[in-house]
Amino acid sequence: MFAYIHSREQAVSEKSQLQQVPCSMALKDQQELTGSSECQQDNDMAAVKQEKEEPADKASKMIDTGSSRINSFGSFLPLEFSFDSNDEEKIPIPNSGSTRFSFRKLWAFTGPGFLMSIAYLDPGNIESDLQSGAVAGFKILWVLLLATILGLVLQRLSARLGVVTGMQLAEVCRRQYPKGPRIVLWLMVELAIIGSDMQEVIGSAIAISLLSVGRIPLWGGVLITIVDTFFFLFLDKYGLRKLEALFAFFIAVMAVTFGYEYVTVKPDQLQLLRGMFVPTCEGCGTRQLQQAVGTVGAVIMPHNIYLYSALVRSREVNRANKKEVRQANRYYFIEACLALLLSFLINVFVVSVFAEAFYNQTNQQVHEVCVNNSSPNSDLFPKNNDTLSVDIYKGGVVLGCYFGPAALYIWAIGILAAGQSSTMSGTYTGQFVMEGFLNLKWSRFTRVVFTRTIAITPTLLVAVFQSVDTLTGMNDLLNVLMSLQLPFALIPILTFTSMSSIMHDFTNGLFWKIVGGIIILIICCINIYFVIDYVWSLQKLVFYIVAAIVALAYLFFVSYLLWFCLVVMGVRFLQCGRTFGSKRTIISEDQKETLERTESMCSADMNTIH
Image (spheres, rainbow, N blue to C red):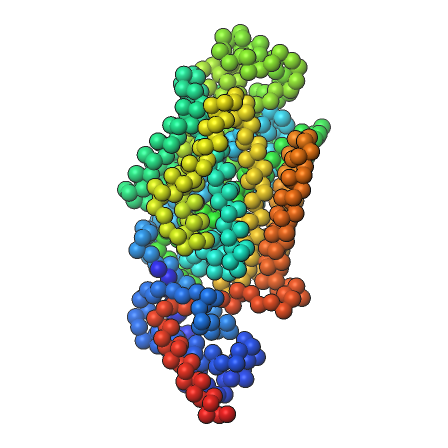
């Protein structure tokens, strides 16, 4: 439930204005501000006057004035939103009465950022990391660092939207975009969620197969992922904090397992630091460039932007108090920094292991080592001098061949933790997105059935009828899919955090608008290159034709989102005479009757004048 709350000092000022300015005298100013022939400004003041007679902490059901007959807050003073739902658990924040940094408050805000960071550690990311190390060594670690920093900036925007408005990104999209673009946007985000879920199923199935030494086939692992997901959902009944603790446990498992591999391999620390902080790539060719581009696409996940804007609403924040909003923004940013730092270190562990042990290795060399160690999977590597190509399955096998069975099993445990945690976060994302875009509430059980059925069907067919190479090769296609969906999260988040009617005093300044625009432009260009390169590598005419048709529709829709964003950010010559939702806001339902009554009074006053 949403509550529209103003401070009492502001209400007193508005009350005096209401008493001093009669309806007829305000008509001219109102027409200049909003183009309305009605005296809506006085209606707004009267509504606030009535509302202030109620208790300040009273929560009211909200109405979107963009779709309501009463749309009168276009030129009113900044509004505040608060989110209050009986269906969602709220974590209280200790009130120390001081603005100084407090570890108690940081602990209270800790949780959403680490859940968000799971998307930086899903099986698709892990596979990108190991391929980066095997293909380019330590040379493009700086790309991973840069991508993580860019992700942090975007997550900051997502958190600010959720904290300031009390609404998630999907809900704001529903209120601001017209119906057609809104439906297309929802479908694109759902596609990204399903694609991510497929990667998580693939990762979990491969991990189960490795742990069972092949006794459980890949298709069996796919089916097991159905059962374990529903099992974890039951933990949701025990409270939000316990669920957040479960995600923290998964992250700890990944840190320990991949950290073990890092300690075992003992990478060259000087090479690691040089690759992380010196942005060069000596001797790199097309393959290394493609891997660098793929790293950016794998790290920044589109649906994760939607998820984080919803997660930050889980703390009790009085959004009528600007100090509390600023405090929440600050602590969430600190938590996001810590969470993404940990996820970055885990990704560095994986890159470094494969950079140190398997960079420039050939299939022949790996085959011989596996044969000498009596590995049952030595046939995975052909007897040729081609550069070693690895995925999350072959990666575990190679580690087992070079560093013993313990390295293989520990690797598999880490991949399983990545797959399971990502599956659960994907379930929450799907639920939030459906509620936000469609205002349709499904239980998490129903949502899992819907998403997991779509994700498992193609994955299961490939696991049954194709080899493990085909199954792991699906990750490349899914990474392309993720790249295509990025503009559908990045452009809306920049658009709405730049709208003063939504963010008010917390609107993006000129600096953040420029920085955000440049980041989005860079990421979109990188990922468009990645997609074009992937399609070109298929070398089939039918794919080129299909890609051309899809590209036209895709570019048209992205152009629309960019146009909307630029107009909202002040490029008025692009407006073409159309009005936007920038003046849409939310009013409480208990104000509706007062607004209608005062509107009638204004109409009577105008008839008297005429």
